[in-house]
Image 1: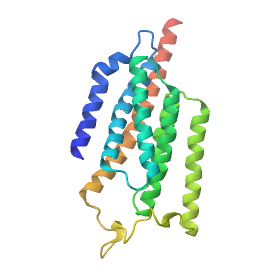
Image 2: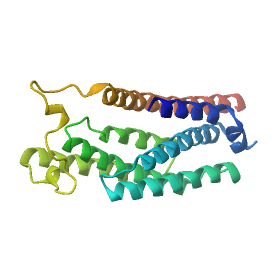
Image 3: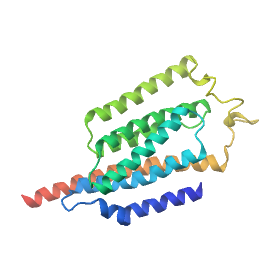
Image 4: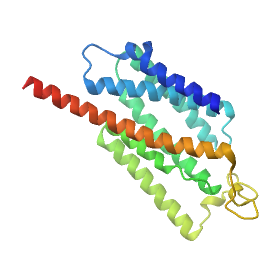
Length: 230
């Protein structure tokens, strides 16, 4: 896992400094477009690596999860090629990826709930940030919000009435959950899962700040440019 994180870190530096970024920029690109291309290259390269990692480990929980990983990886590659070859942003690819990630986050949250682990629906914050930064049609953000609210309603009713969502025979874990499998629960989960939770939480927080800061800086730069013209 540490080697994989080191690989992702190198990808971040490459996306910022190497020819990938310089190749994507046009002379007539405005500040917002430059920031969006920079953001997409960083996100695309790192997320494609995550898809490759998931597929190499074998995603066994859901066939749908595996299919979504393959489709997501192909879409990511297509988006990167579009940015580098045509030097433009494919908003259709971004929209497809947001929906794919939305479904994957819901499936991950479902699996986490069945194993009494930390929820993952908070990752929808990043999807909404990207939808706003990319200036996608409002319906994209509204659809993501509707997906999340519907999932929250479903999980709330399951926790209230236990109607069987967490007991699907071919998905639900067998035996005792790791968090309860000791004399005095909640049980320690070990350094590996602890690091996973730490990385996931800090990544969510820092990426949300990165998206919001870049969007705010872009607006401030455009405002200064308009003031200079006037």
